[in-house]
Length: 100
Length: 246
View 1: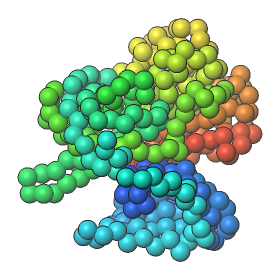
View 2: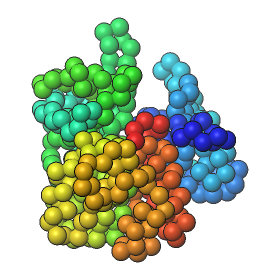
View 3: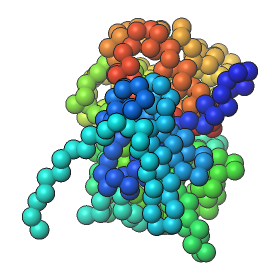
View 4: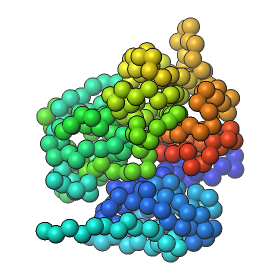
């Protein structure tokens, strides 16, 4: 834990899975198994497998391969601001619309 | 039926002490949609002045239990939620719950095996849901749990794990105690390392579906070691707790 040279933030990292509740509130569906492509290195990761930093004022999700920032989300009042410019795409499942 | 992102009220119907710092809470949730082993719930506490705080807790119970679930919570001394759950909540109290959440760190018998589970401290909780589900389904999928705790009094679910491992249905449990070992201890006595993982993984082969849960440093160590041992990255699922724990 206290190795010299080790990034002190490394131990604070959790998985995208840990912020699944907040993300579900943003996207309106379960997203941890949703694939998305990192705009920095091109790796396709599931959201649940991203590295998540949650101790700041918002959520920062980084690519587990290149550590580039892929998604940032900040709650402010009743709104959540999402910056996903580090994601080339996110693949949403098509929802079947039923009557009623 | 409430959607997973909507808060619902659960009634505390049972509280069980697991270790000096860990307790399990059974919540009655009449409108619960059901969950899959490995998923978690968010618990929200709201003060009279409107200040609210929420935390995620892994579900410990198997999906086969209808209308209720169990969470197992470690008391974090300076935490905002866990000391309240440990010191204030009594049976009959109601808590705000939403979920089930997360489809990533999930295992069910239909996914098959062999299954390797690696836990540090309260990281065993979602893995326990998987083992309870496996037992309830009567599955004989070859399964090994490597469970790291600090000392003998801190092994969560020890009696139940020993009982499940005694069924002879393909489950083996290996313990490691990192700080304090009782006299005559025959398990491992060090932090999880490459050699330990090699010994535990070997009988399962390098195609084992692997779930690692615990403090971030332990998860990093175990995941990197298993990659070095030849396990493909897409067979490894991790859930990191952050800096607390073992």
